[in-house]
Image (tube, rainbow, N blue to C red; front, side, top):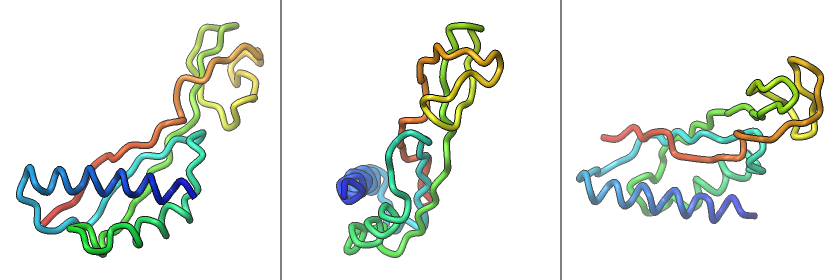
Length: 113
């Protein structure tokens, strides 16, 4: 379950920010998750609760924001939103698409006390 290691990375970032800004408690963590990132949200939520124990983010709420899959169509030269990596271009129907977004996962912000 790679979601556990993702949460360990999130915890490291939170702890670094807590030290740098004298944060004593994190109430919520918002993360952006791309459609093609391969992150299992239920597993991430479970892992988050486990990994945050004993940290300034213990008991914090995890909010997951979905980011769409995006691709550049080489047939019509548009950047388009796609549901699946192998979908045709929704604008022109072309099949020459290069994914340009949707595989990311990043911390958007923290709500702190």
